[in-house]
Length: 270
Image 1: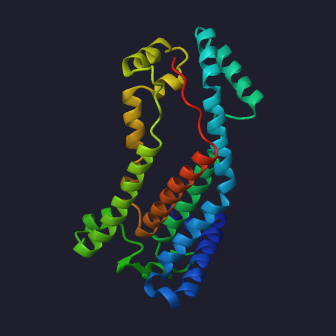
Image 2 (image 1 turned 45 degrees about the vertical axis):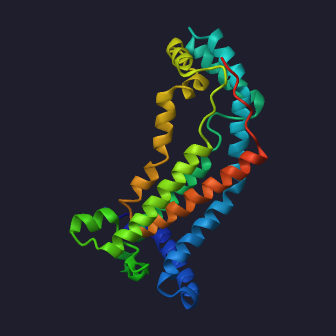
Image 3 (image 1 turned 90 degrees about the horizontal axis):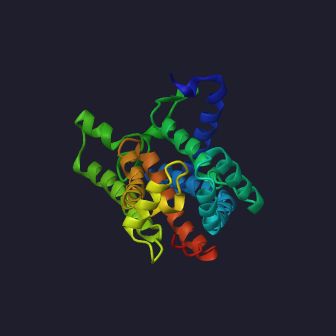
């Protein structure tokens, strides 16, 4: 099903198409064939800048949840045999502190449709009944509507194209690795890996998030999650790959700044 042709969504895609083409036309005298790529990067920056207040709220929420971790552990010990009571007490604690376990989800929820729209704009030859001129634009000589997986499947991958896609994928992975290293969960100095594993095992009925994060297996999984975006970039159009690289880079810089502004409390050993 072509979502761009549905009555309820055709105007949205057509509006996004008009915005991108308008920005590309404005930038064309200065950037030539890469004007559409620059327009995508510019829109990404505008979207992320608009989400700065929610990012601040997210960091404050993380700070509050980290501060509440010792109280959460006490509740989990007290009500470990009564999951329903534990859930009520935890939600009440969040409510009393003016935070939520789901605080900070808005940036991800907002960005999902944005990257979805960009993805759709560069895979459909027609938008709302007219030709999609965005597909004529390129970045470093590579069409913005092409994908690394698609080029490989079609047998049309060339070395220049591979270098462009490879550069973006490697750059996204590099940002993910820096993010993993900078924001690796801290383990209390007196808590070792075996103790963390025992803490997780003891709380099967009411898992302890703080103890779970100390598990070597969980830490390794959290590190791998940083590279999912790089894998995703192999399958989406080049235009969406540019969006992903821009947004993960913005996220890293923003998190570093907010971490300094709203530092996390040191973890307390169980």
